[in-house]
Length: 90
Image (tube, rainbow, N blue to C red):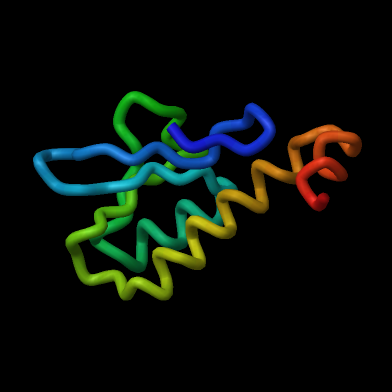
């Protein structure tokens, strides 16, 4: 599990024998990405509306994976209290 300020935003794992990362994202973003990419699927064992599994050995370019990880991090940071966000920026 990868957390920021106690809020999980990523989980690295193997899914169906493939290296993968589960990322938190908006419902809209998840639906769009899943329809566009076969290597982005609903995450098993997590809230499928908000968590998507991104396979790391598939067709997605590294730059897109980095973008999705950063977007998941930013979404988690938005959930933190203002004092906690300020501590992160120090």
